[in-house]
Structures are given as structure tokens and as C-alpha cells.
Image (cartoon, rainbow, N blue to C red):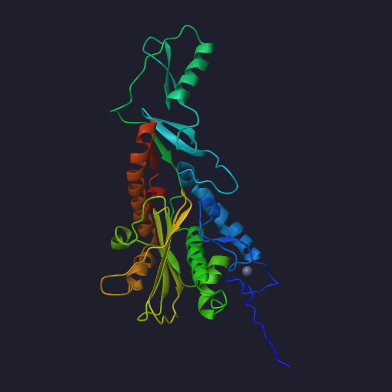
Length: 357
Ligand SMILES: [Zn+2]
């Protein structure tokens, strides 16, 4: 009698390394769903680990970037995004406002002041429909009232200062970057292959926050930031790289192409051929792209020492200069897109060590 043996590849979780039916697979997004992440898998991460990651740092980090979800109209499956708190500076005064999904104030700014004769006057600033609505509201309460219109074109727009957590070196954000790189790698390779001790460190960093050696830091290499990795603002990207001449399996991860990180997945990796895989996601249009990176001389050999060392030597300085890079890049895009809304969006400047005291 002929014997037939059927081998079935079981689901193995790339974090806890447990297999089905002890654990069950879940839908895991490489970039968080709530950040508009496009690519997901159902054969890399178990429900337990997905839940742990979400609860331990992903949720908190996603909330810190809610401004970008809002301003670029990125909706998660869970629906619309709530208003983003911001402060507006106008004529030397600060006001707290809330921005809607288009980056517009949900309510207009109303300034009540007294002129030299002690007479009250109101200034209403904001998008036209909101200003008109407010105008009617005030008219119904105070009569008689006369209005004069001030054209804001050509003069400095009120600035809305958006506070996002500007400490880019924080561990929870670096864990999120590491998660993106590791899960992308799991997506490219069978999860069975990731059941290897060389990935223990990166797994422990992501799941438990353990960091005997630093495996993820902020990218400060200007040639990469303004060259190969200069993706359009608002796009997420992860690039995985390995080369036969190097033992490092590394990655670059960017959120919104504003905040850039490097990740060392393994320092004991034997690449038979060069690997340079890029995944770029457009959260607004829900599209994924896979461009090919090749240097002129052949495959890309990354000098990881040069990438890693600046952060290891002075993480705070790298964090501040990266935040400034993000602010500048954001400003260029935001000025083009939102200059006509009557409010100019500005990201809060990072606080330096001296200012903190
Ligand atoms: Zn698991």
C-alpha cells in the first residue's frame, strides 16, 4: 500500500514562536491600521502578541500622531478621527482651538477687546462659513452692531501650533519602528525561518522593551534623508537591507516620511545575495508601492556603523535635529496645502536640554 504523507506548514507566531492551535493568527498591519497602514498579514503574528503590542506601545504612539491622521484625512476602520488640539497665536495672544479632519478650526477664534474709548469690539477669525455663523450668533445677542471686514491676505496668518510629542528618541516610538521592520521581514520570509536565536534581541525589545544593546535609533544621515529615503511627505516606508559582505540585517523605517529610524534586526545574518526591499505606503489613498533600490555599482552595502553611531553617541542631539528636519519638511508641504485656510499650521519646536531646566 502506498503511503502518502502530507506536510502542512503550521502557523508560527514571529514573536512568541508558538504554533497553531495553541495560538491563533490575527490580522496584523505592518504600519498601524489607525495610521492608515495598508499592508497586513494573517500568517505572522498571533492574536495574543498583536494585542500585547497594541496595548503596550502602539495605541499610545498612534494617539501622539493623531494630528497627521487628522490633517491628511486618514481614517481607520474604526471611523472618523476626533478633533486635534492646537493653539493659535494671534496678535501676541494664545488661544486653544480644535482642528477638524481638513486641518481647519472647528470653531472660529473670537477676540473681545475694548478700544481706547472703552467700547467693546469683536474680531472673528477663521474660515468664512464659520465666521458668518458666529457673526449671526453675536448679532442675535448684541444690538446694534456693525462689522468691518479685514482682508488677511498678505499679512501674517494666525499660526496654529501643533504639539506632538517631540521627544523622538522615546523608547515606545522606537519599539513601534522596530515592530514595523520585524513584521515586514516576517512578511517577506516564512515565519518558520524567523524561529531563530538571532532575532531574540529584536523580539525582546519589541515585546518587552528590553534593550541590552540599542537596536533602534533615529536616522540622522542627511544623504539618505534627502536622497534615497526622501519619500513624499505623508507616506510611510520600510526598507530592509542586507549584503553578503555584511552580517547585519537592517532596516529603515519612516512614519509620514517625517520621522526616520534605523533598526538592526540581526547582527548575525548571512546573506547569500543582497536584499534591498522597499515598501512605501500611501495612507491617504490606501496604496502600497514596491520600488527597487540599486546603487550604480551593484547592490547596496550600507555602512551600519555610520548610521548607528551618531545616535549612540548623542541621542538627544540627534533627536532634536531630526525633529527640526521633520518640522521643515512638514512646513514645506503644509504651506502649499493649507496656506489658504486662514490658519498656518506649525509643529511645536523640540525642547532642548538647556530649555528643559
Ligand atoms: Zn505570538
